[in-house]
Image 1: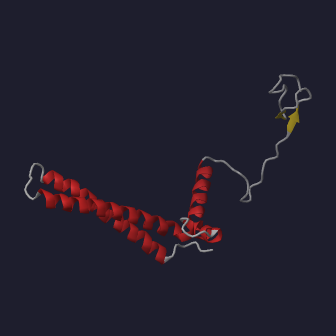
Image 2: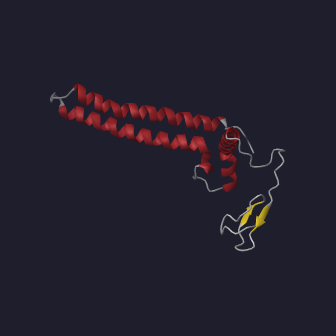
Image 3: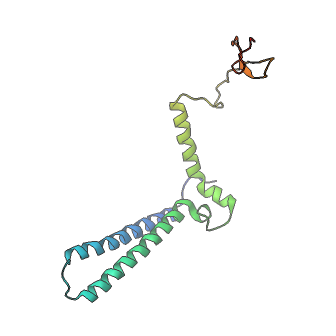
Length: 150
């Protein structure tokens, strides 16, 4: 199990990012051209064709970039393109480890101990109510459920 993301996956991820940015710029250029030529109807047909081509090409590049970015981030099996659960687990392992580390940091900051890590657990003793069967703290004098004396 590798804890590093391969150079090939990084390359696909960054290629997807570049294609997405180029696609976004092409798509937004349509609006800039439209604003700059507002009211100008000379050569309208050619300009309209150019703007439509840029808009469609930009959208295609944004979709392709998003697809490549997700495949680069999660790998072929991790993104669901290849049906191999073992390989998917290996490809997603760095992100699972990161999420677990972030959860541990959050629990440590909140001073919540869920056991493990060499810390001893505190033993909890509960007293069962003879009347209703509810478990109560060992120092309770009356049942939390029915109110009867313990």
